[in-house]
Amino acid sequence: MRKLLPLLLFTQVVLNPQFIWNTHGEQNRPNILFCISDDQSYAHTGANGDPVIQTPAFDRVAREGIRFTRAFCDAPTCGPSRSAILTGQPIWRLEEAGNIHSTLPSKFLTYTELLQQNGYATGFTGKGWSPGRLAAGGRNANPAGKEFRQKNLKPPYRSMSNKDYAANFELFLEQLKENQPFCFWLGTHEPHRGFEVGAGKKSGKDPAKVLVPPIFPDHPVVRNDLLDYYVEVEHFDKMVERAMASLEKTGQLENTIVVITSDHGMPFPRAKASLYDAGAHVPLAIRWPKGIVKSGRTYTGLVNLSDLAPTFLEASGVAVPKMMTASSLLSVLENKSKKQRDRAFIAMERHDGCRKGGKGYPSRAIRTADYLYIQNIEPNRWPAGNPDREFCARYIPFGEVDSSPTKSLLMDNKERPEFKQFYDLAFAKRPAEELYNVNEDPGQLINLSTKPKYATIRKKLAQQLKDHLIRTKDPRALGLDAPWDYYPYYGLRRNKNWQVDPKP
Image 1 (spheres, rainbow, N blue to C red):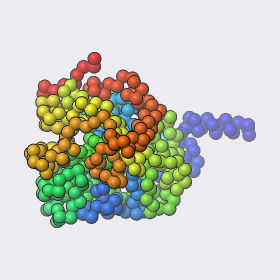
Image 2 (cartoon, rainbow, N blue to C red; image 1 turned 180 degrees about the horizontal axis):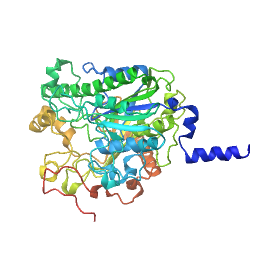
Image 3 (cartoon, one colour; image 1 turned 180 degrees about the vertical axis):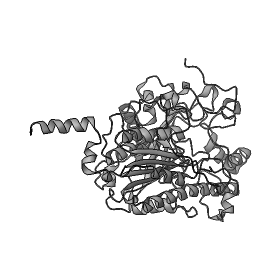
């Protein structure tokens, strides 16, 4: 019998992945509340230093957990970023999922489905994996989980969603089995465009106190546009605050990993859909009293949001599949990290396809504590989409940039000397290589790639980027077929004549 016990134990573990946890009790497995806003840059939380915005939920999680000062999305565009988060892989490994308005092929495992297979209840509200078509990738449900959308509210401002995200999370909690661990995705549609013009001033905020990023002119239109964006971020934060209150009420907060972040940067020119910090540097805070050692810390290492997938799996005792190339943050949470996290990687392929033939703007970047190095693979293309709206599925000029008062201000005044610099930063063509000293030039305004003084740094970063792309099998780095320009586009086509070129 003693000889048979090891075999019996092995059989139980292999055939019943919940066995290990059942021997210890389901209550020991951490819950996961993943809160993700839609288009929010790093700077725009109270804990990260903004003097105007009010984000008590984020600030609390940062204060009682860990605040990450150098967290970066894998791609500054909704669908690809969310695909990377779910799969723990960079977008160049995800085929069609590297494009927005595409699909997420079912062969790419997600942390949510692996947790569900191991006894977790999964669900989402608001914006889960999106936008795109799931059936095209062989999926019949959103990979974020089962959708909860029954509860609505009257939003405080026009253009905000009427979904009561926090109430829908409560509905999810009510249907859990006793002691069942859960993984819930609370994704708001805010602060995605559009905004109610003047909402910021209506809320009592003072435009004079706004910190205008150096990539924009200091102009009343910009200041008020930023205020309107702030109230949308605050709406997201209030939903998170209410969700945490529900967990406190039910006694589950202390055993819940609460994560607050955003899929990418703010919906402004030279931010969203660009590899600069305004587009890729995102807020990230994690609270988990039972798992974080030395709470209240600030972590300055560089991380990608794709690192969250293996983190959730490892924290839950679920094996991380080999296809997930991202690195778990569990050792960081436990304050045992020996891994030198000194770089993050960011990429873009096709956003809204606002170029002739549905072409994208392929680019890759490496971000360190001191520098941002970018390779623009097709520098002859317009980075923000063609100036002519005829080449855009959205039927707007420079269609990779959402319509906004700030965008209109730059376009309407492009000939005026005081605006030309900002217009060019947002819309002009870019060189094949860009290099920025992010400490001396936080807005990434001065390209150092051609300066002899920085030649050694440029070559070093270029080699590090190349090595990483080859190691993780980026088709472009390997000289293989890179079909992102030719994948189907499933988004709304306001330009009825627009179409994707057939693959040659």
